[in-house]
Image 1: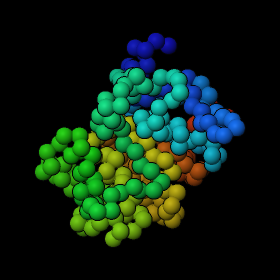
Image 2 (image 1 turned 60 degrees about the vertical axis):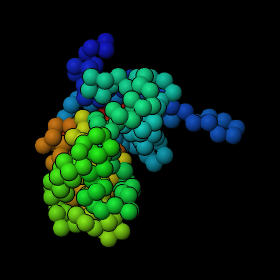
Image 3 (image 1 turned 90 degrees about the vertical axis):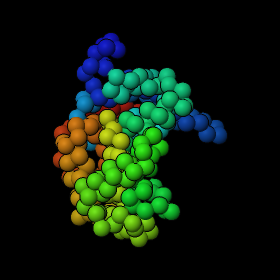
Image 4 (image 1 turned 30 degrees about the vertical axis):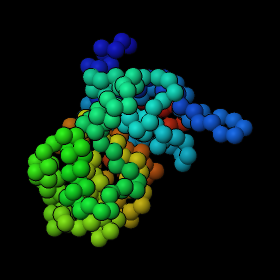
Length: 232
């Protein structure tokens, strides 16, 4: 498969990704010549045992970390060769990330947290706040705009985190156990919200989860086993 076919056919394409971590006395190979593709608008559940490397893979797919070797395409961009500054700019504009822990900035309101990626990306502050207000309404938190994270419930914080990840209309949205710290009912609502946004905005969605019921709602399931993807 040549590079042009990768660009035209897939929203997200990784080839031969390798990643190891070194520690005193040895080395752990986490990813071993891993291949993964997801079409634009695809909706994929990433399964695998705890500690198998799902977070590592998502961090690399989202350009939060670099592989030791291999290549990664997002849309029409081959990003593994980008310098740090260019990579940060691309990640801000093209990738959304929802973590298990919301990582909201405690000193800012819900509205300001959502607007932050837009402001960092160069959007006028007034425009960013307008977009953030719309997203806040979309996740059902219109009346929480001025509340800081400490004044929100866990489910509300995670909804704000989802809205923040969508601020710049990313090509790819990655979620790492986004419902892991929530009760079943709230977790289901977050999962449904992610699926709705995937459908409405046409982004590529990859969600790492241990929850088989939630994974079954995704269009496709893959499993990380011994450093490689099965179920392509």
